Length: 449
Image (tube, rainbow, N blue to C red; front, side, top):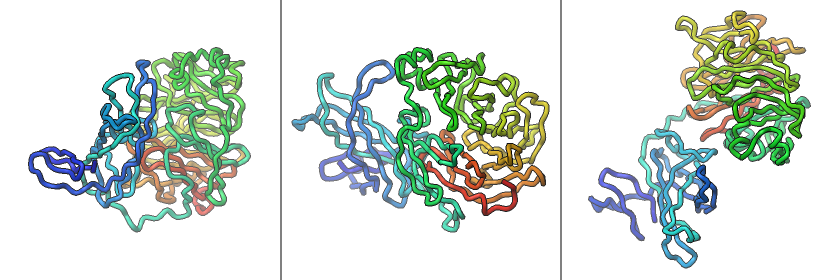
């Protein structure tokens, strides 16, 4: 079946064309290429085994398309029709893309179809997919926009970016809500920008004995735990089923309590700092204020309790020791960036006025000399374009360095991490425009490293 353009009077398909059901006028095929669907089974949240189909849609035309929907007939091995399938474009986590998100020219996106069989004992063998969509004007593209001295390493959903103490750059690809064992891991060559697949850099904790020690009973508990290893530590951080934050050894022993009384807060992720310390950040949805705590993998608390820290409009960037953060706040109707103590929120220094991009943007990054912060790298949306800025702490001046190839929808996130020598900033993002980029900071003399 050929794809149809949706119209007010409906659309039907035939074996040799595509027609408006009322007008009976032939429609041109859409320039949306659909890969053959792969049929698989999974267990849904209700414990029922169901069939689904997955693949990719690519826009090969010059227009953009909204409300992309897919449907088709399911056939058995003998060619008999045994069911139907219907679905939409999804993200890396299998969730439908947000309304109003267009598939731009040249873009590809995964799709997911639910399969409904006429009887439970039937086995699908093939699926013919038809796609419908609403044509719209493509997003404007600035042909003069270039990204000077920025290296594109990877294009796709990046779930994690990290540097080791030795200067190795690792990144993971997949759904950010999955566990680190489900991601595909790669190491990047910072000289050439090339990358290669690597084995899982951390031990797999799915041993039943370990999970019992962690009080994690099923896959949902494991996902909720947000288990993560600091790139320079053998220990990991996780939350239990009631959101108590702890650290532990790889075998689940020697657990150290970080904070309890966190049941009302939603853990979203971690920001790693040198010295095996970290910032854990919490918010419920896009646009909500961010709360946070800082601690060490050894189990030492640095910050005061989460309900007492100064809330932020962005994910805060911690100093190497976790004793201070740079964050954004709205004070008397004016948005600005501040350095705030994590032990005494009243101890704060205003850096500059400027709009904050939201809690899905990369956290600010401190550049430090012998653990003494000298500069802060900030990524903000300025006039509709993501830009990298640096704040020189000694001169107390803000400098705009370059535009960035970062485009985030409200339901997508980005991350950044500074190399140990301070020369390279790695920028990662998930979503339709996700990827991994390397920014050469040695070209900018405005801020010390």
